[in-house]
Image 1 (cartoon, rainbow, N blue to C red):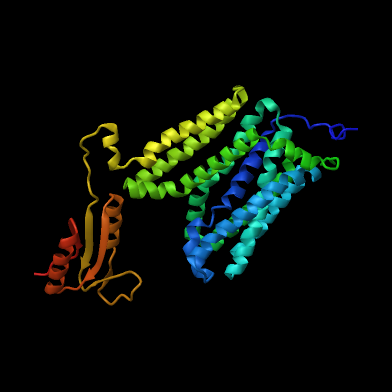
Image 2 (spheres, one colour):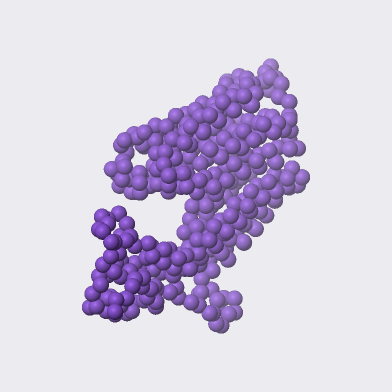
Length: 399
């Protein structure tokens, strides 16, 4: 009897909402683990007594383990079933996040990051096969689009969410919270993913299957998918910094820009699923979307003043960012955090002014607090005027 005849009957093809929502949410949590420590590298370097470069390599350790497990998890789920592999990946990742939050040394943090990568790769190597098992072919594109949405939104929203949480509880607290939510999600996976059974393949089938699959078209598709994910990750991590430095946008405008990117990513994933279900030429649809993405991104990322001549412009109106110096005066004014003598006040004006001026896109130099001495104030004004366009002072004037 052939290996195909030994396989159990395929499960019913449905599109259960609970399954898709749970897998989309879990994909968001699992994928967020890959970039969650990015905002806290400096704090982790201090707490773990390690160099910043070494702490940055924790992300690389996770990625290596992630990639290795992604190659083997799918095959393992074919043999033992999808649910045990999914659960094992989520529980491993959740436990590893707990370990990372409790780490007292760089070595232990590196070990727990490796474990996080093993758990993440195990889940991500199986989740797409799980969706394909339980969704009809005509609706599979939309269903996979939901899962990919969870993965993509982790890059768009995951880091800001962890940064906001870490501002209150630190990187250890944010990591522990992520671990708790991930471990709780394992119960949802147990409830909504059908148990199923693995199938026993004939001897030699895996190698033969790999040899059959490794055709030029599939290799090209894998390469294109890998490149697309790498480009998206780079954009998600570095787009904010690029906009701040190249376009000198304010923080409020940057928030709007990143919000538009998030909405566009969500809409693209959902629309792409519908297109894949209805357009028979799927490779052509994928190629067209990739070309369109690059065409829209090039003007944003490559525009520099030197490009004006290439499009026939002879003049450009440019403005240098204003250089502003800010200082306070008064012997009664003290910086926050210092002992406050009788009759003195803390300096709040200077910090407020610096924040407001930076929000307008100016380059701010904080000159601190000056004593109530004529020569001190006069020298500070003279020196600051030589390298700044605007001077802002805060303090009273004695008669």
